[in-house]
Image 1 (cartoon, one colour):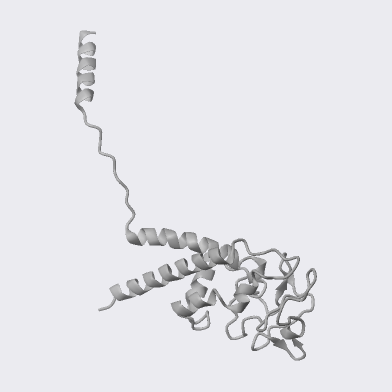
Image 2 (cartoon, helix red, strand yellow; image 1 turned 90 degrees about the horizontal axis):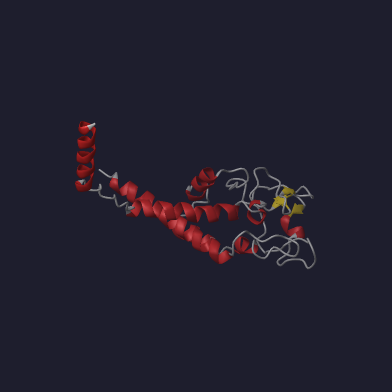
Length: 202
């Protein structure tokens, strides 16, 4: 009993003088912070590009999609070589320079078309990883570098997504929010690629 009591007293005394282990401060380096910011930005980009206002003109097949449920275009037009339709069924036959007045009538733009056959830029069915790789790959994005990709955020057809005509749902974020996320993601991804390439030079 006396031995047990002595062991207890010694244990208590020892614990009194024991120092707490130092807390570890966690800091993210610049590359990690950039990576996190880039991922968050692309989440906004991805959900916008996968919305009907963007995806409908970037289908997996050669028939554009239509409506908020992204069904196949009722008129059955085809992409064609230049993305503007085939034979007498051209996009511009129904899609005029501006939106046609009325509920669910054809939206308009002077350059209304799908991506051309040689550069189809499919969004439909793409995972975030697949779409991200495609968007920055010059062989798949129309040979666009960082400057051209950033400028593309203000392309007339991109802007048309936020002016789709009566009865259509807008993209999930404003154009300003999309553009900010787009630029953030593009700059960080391409700058990281450039720095990685430079570090690997002989």
